Image (cartoon, one colour):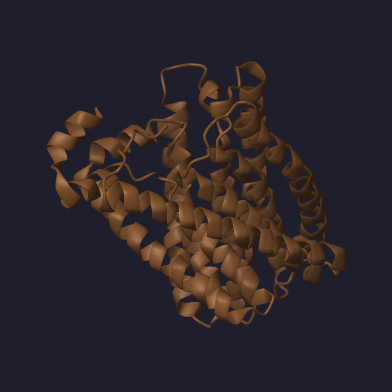
Length: 363
């Protein structure tokens, strides 16, 4: 297949670019998510220059990935349809929703609330469409059974997308007029609640896959870290809801949201050691090569989200220990971001600029 593509798409730099676009992973917006959330954390901690740098990376990556995705949709629709039919890859498209809202939240911190509102509308519509299309095409519409055998960590990205809508809504609500503030409060609480139920569903299905079928070292891919990231963004969304201005929906749920946010933070914390151990087992004991792949951004984002969630939860619920843990974790996330970014630059140089390696089919 790689040889056929090479002939069809041509040789040289232009051909390599076309192959890169065709093989673009649907979850590549995790680059936007990771860069944006660490930028938010750095801004909260007062590192404005570094935060601005990552903010520009976030915005630039978003624009570039939107253009490349549109190019891919127009030029390679068969590849896109194939991904929507594959339960192992289709949920990666929800990274567009989450990346859009992370960028929007970062822009709101600089006062660009108009952009944030526009991005929220775009992400909300996309979240609704994908929320019905992807489960049908990739799960319910499949003739092969059992579908649970194809479940993996990418399924938790649906949860992240839902909670990102809640975070963006809660970020815009304070200071809004009564009508708009009430609507944003409803959207924030509803999407946060939907995200919790989706987390339970995804958790059960992915757990069944791990218990009922052989779990090889190569199967423990980086997106399993999204299980922790989904918990962390649930915490962040909850903390932002607690801080919203009074509204009927907020007043009815504020206590419940605050309590569950602490519970989810505890569970996210508990998940980190098993995830680290799984990586050690995969790469050290079973010698699976640790090379750059787009899914590595699925580790960066959960680390950054855990840090920001801890910082916000420490402020909202007056939990200084949680805030301190988040502040320390932020630098772990930043170090991971630097390493993965360096790996991505080297990978792009070798595959696009110099063609020292090929573009294998994504799994």
